[in-house]
Image (cartoon, rainbow, N blue to C red; front, side, top):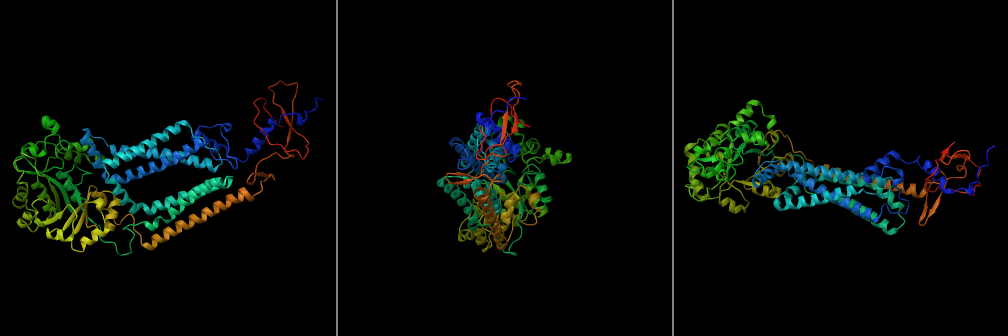
Length: 616
């Protein structure tokens, strides 16, 4: 016979903590929680983390601050990502703006989008991990490396937004326009997100023992939720309209031809635009030193020709200071294959690539004759030559000479945009379609014989478009290349748009977003109603679980503000511990069942640092 078992009263109760831990492990999602805590706070081992007990805050003050900064960073990075993703219509302008300042080509817009998307994804994953940990009742601990990552993302989002707002403030108008298309779907996503957040909010609301905290968390949650519920009341979109009131699709004018599939302002580019079904062509006209109007958008030849190779000492000289013979020596197509500004050069066949490399700077005469052959409308900006140029004061009349005497285009095909000497031009050729690049009163426009407005898309207004249309003044918007922006222009009643994406927009059969007011109201009401029902069920479940559901062990314990369930070891589950003196200190003790006084109840203390108790 071995020695008698040591009585339980003489043992340290701390050695029985392991018993309770093994009981708890039955009811915890250990691999899931370990993964969450490991990714969020590098707490891969169980002893490194702790559960938030009823009545306790979910984290320390420092961690509360980190969690708050995580939420702020999430929303700021989301705003910037949305802002920049909706600015895709103007990425080409942004990249060429940087080319003009830096002197070399690089797709900065795409890089910026990728970085913004990557940082937002990182922050979103961290926030998701935090919410999951809170839903599991775990205390939050954010690893220091993630805190640095949050600061980097926050700094990037604020800096990028500030810089772009300063350099490109017009894009905020684009953001507001995009909401007229995306707001219904953003509302649906926001309500869904807040509905899912009701689970951790309800869990911690019922576990808090301080009324102030309960009111704060519930008040903030409900304020945001009800604001989202009521957002549609202030939403306006021209694409929410009665059935049968949608007008015809806007006609398409190729912006410098079809610059996404061919080098801009070349014969190939204009031919591609016509092949894609374009109704008109847009370009920019400059006059050479010897009086030949030619097509060039920039002040210099550096961006779209090989002037650096042919005339290395005249790279930054104004294009208008070159003679036509010198301009004919330049290659106006190879840059498109080398820089691939739209990422579409790969789609060109070998024959098309060879043809691209052989493009030259076209003259206005060639452009007008091409449009005449295909019956296309034309619109162009006319750049006045610099000081010292022989045609600085006669550039208007010289252009009219080419139009009337050197080309065979019909004057009614020309949308005359230059505002200088408009009265003279109207007298010389009344068949030209006088076009204004700015808005004005109806009386002023009619006095100048204006029949069309050519406006930047950011000034889009359904009310203004309808007002001008009532007096037969049509509206053209530039540059519209994204399908969502074209859809908005379509719904607003725009008559035509200038675009880079002729081949994409021509295939659109209807706006991307179009619904009747009744359909939208039904979508709004159903979304909010389902959300309310789900949130009520979630709060009811947590109230029932925390306050009304007896624990399966039958144990109840009273907290200072009410009862809550907690594991404890019942007398039938208590195990005695017997040491075998024959074995060494490191030999595991044997756990055996002992009859116990029912009045004795044990709560397992910490895991012992010595010995390895096992069940037998």
